[in-house]
Image 1 (tube, rainbow, N blue to C red):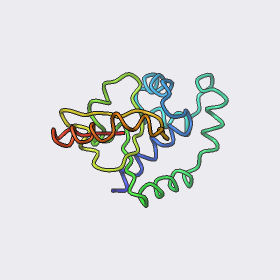
Image 2 (cartoon, rainbow, N blue to C red):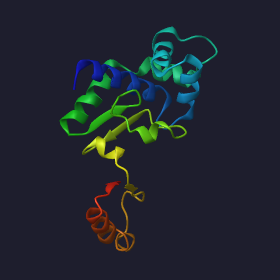
Image 3 (tube, rainbow, N blue to C red):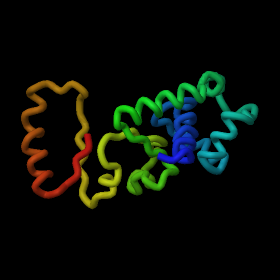
Length: 152
């Protein structure tokens, strides 16, 4: 991964650190400032009065480059990829949804998210044996035979 890409991920990671994951507020502010990069500059350096909450400003003051680099380093050391919204590898389908994630952490091949057919499996982190039975083997076998990408 190039230094520029790490810097870009760091900008988006900083934004998520200030506002939280999955917050529509990020997109409201990005629209207000014109882009995620402009939002980053505003929260990290300019901090205009009356726009950011005290909690957001505290998060901005407490988020350090060292913390962000440690997270990125951990991910790379554990084969966890990171792709930001402005990255060319960001899945095109996600760009068009309401409140898309600013950052995606993934294992495997990110380009599979551009497949024609995708099955997403959503459920409990620690499912019971009962809930595993009806879908796990049959679903995976069917998807494998049909060359469908499965994300969980």
